[in-house]
Length: 309
Image (cartoon, rainbow, N blue to C red; front, side, top):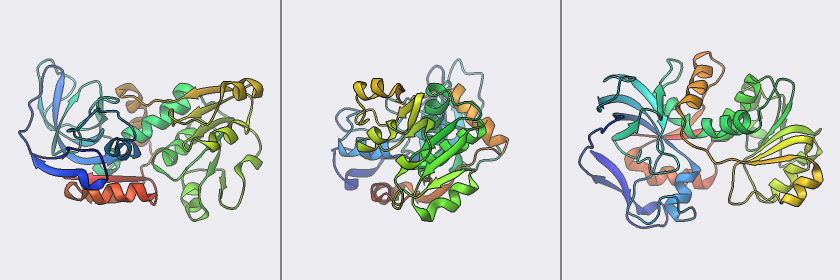
């Protein structure tokens, strides 16, 4: 099978297309014939060495996958050959999804709902679970709360605003003006053009999902009303100190996304009900993975970018 391997840390040029033996599923595993692969910012950070999640090369990147079950290993009864599935694999370990076939544990995958194409399904797991685990698992968003989502037109952000709306929240969202039409279609109540308006001028909110970090983390904390919560999705640079949190009387939760079939099932349920959609902005072939990484690094992706074999 074809697979993307990198033998050194560095720029997109270190990503190589190679041929390796197709793996066989072990106990509790299935082999998935890849239909599409989600590309996420973490992929870029691991490739460059900025985030040493997988140690030293060689390794294969990728955690998001959607495809068809090709074979099942011993002890597997929940899935059968021919089932269409999606999942976030082995996070924070090695998912190895930049490949034509991937091995997945049955507790990492769920059935693909009919409302999502294979490309949309591949774009859902990591971004969707980041949003879900942040807003539902950590912030416990409730009906009537005000929720501020940063980078709301990005991969995580555009799913987060839909999850917040599904929870009954009033959603404030930052994005450039050209992306406000998309945000309104997704249900955003108050789009904020961060280039023209300081987001700290909005009415205080109950929850902030900070997808930026750094200095924006500090400023985001000051928008949260006492008793509210700031969820930081960049643990390496939240921009928030314990002293600031204590002084403001808010709660600070640091988000580290993890594989979870139960959480993913809740997301696919929303998608099946038509309450959650995945905006796929760009589709590249597996052989064009370096160009895909360049697009992510360029910051011009709205929604999700995916690879197809």
